[in-house]
Amino acid sequence: PANREAFARALEVCRHPLCYNGDLFGMEDAKECMERFPGIDALMFGRGMIADPQLPENCRALQEKAFDRDRFFGFHRAILQGYEEVMSGEKNVLYKMKELWCYMGVSFPGKEKIIKKIKKAGTLREYNQLISALSE
Image (cartoon, rainbow, N blue to C red; front, side):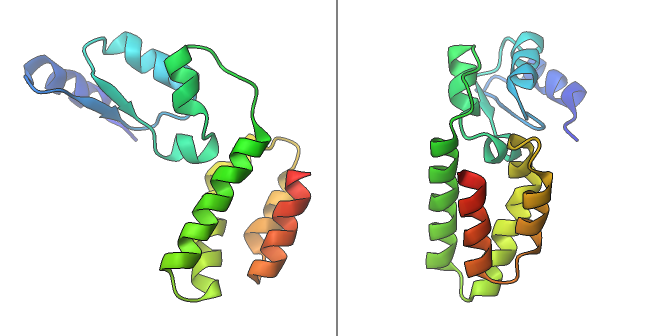
């Protein structure tokens, strides 16, 4: 977990631009961070952005927009294609993609059964069929 007390001490003494990074999973987390640390220059989203690719945009606008399924699945497709280009073997790609669903799954409340099947898929073909079913 993020150590916000240590970050607060660093913010007091550092003369360089600082970026907060750690456990930002939603707008409320980002708002709380910006209120607590008004001197920060940037926020870095990692796992929170994997779950919701719109998160940085929503935070900049200071309003939460409706979940954009098309945008999410475009983001998903880009990650999948990137892994397919740089990794060797279907199993390696599949392992990486299934790992991401630990974070992505929170964007699909009520779809826990299909998320569980995605995490258990044995082939990319099966995985892609489940993703198609989820995206409908």
